[in-house]
Image (tube, rainbow over all chains, first blue to last red; front, side, top):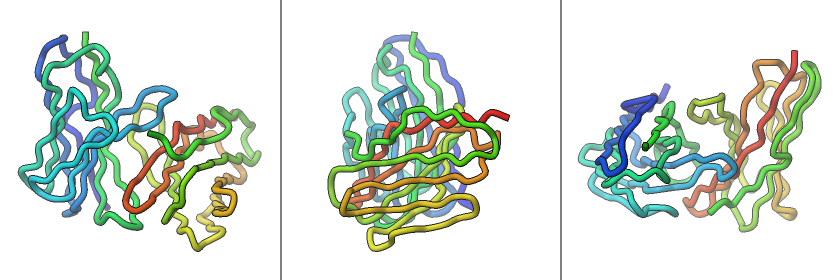
Amino acid sequence: DVKVTQSSRYLVKRTGEKVFLECVQDMDHENMFWYRQDPGLGLRLIYFSYDVKMKEKGDIPEGYSVSREKKERFSLILESASTNQTSMYLCASRLGLGGEWQYFGPGTRLTVT
Amino acid sequence: SQQGEEDPQALSIQEGENATMNCSYKTSINNLQWYRQNSGRGLVHLILIRSNEREKHSGRLRVTLDTSKKSSSLLITASRAADTASYFCATDANNDMRFGAGTRLTVKP
């Protein structure tokens, strides 16, 4: 079974802090994704990566950056956390791009005060 | 931006009843996927149906796809309290995957 893990289940940070959210998958998947989930808005794609050192902006990349130095690890960085980035963050991976489902991590609930 | 839109937003039924959730979308797709999310957890995939398929079954789950109407439905038969969760449809169009806002299903014992 594919396993996607995220570094924290709950995180509380202060406004202006730099925040790192880590995601690791153990099935050699090419593609990894970061979403944020807010009530009534569903999942919105922040960034995704097709391969090591490659990244593509999703629908809401502003205020975020990502890093993929190794195939199994995809990090989401909040350069200067703001209260409107309080949300549930979900990482996912997928073997290929076409015709495959995504495997999700358990999520990180981030609160920025 | 969202592609799939689930209907209803929330559904409450008694144990043993059937639950039907619908998903509508706007553009052509390669496949449509249904996921489940327990409260505060990540999503788990349930069923994937390709654009050339009309119906698919998995245990108590039945998914239909009508590409002419750009809609899909998820039927859960003989529901159980453990089916209480949020259910999301996701459309996959040329490697662009979009999730809806979900249907919150509550199954009362």
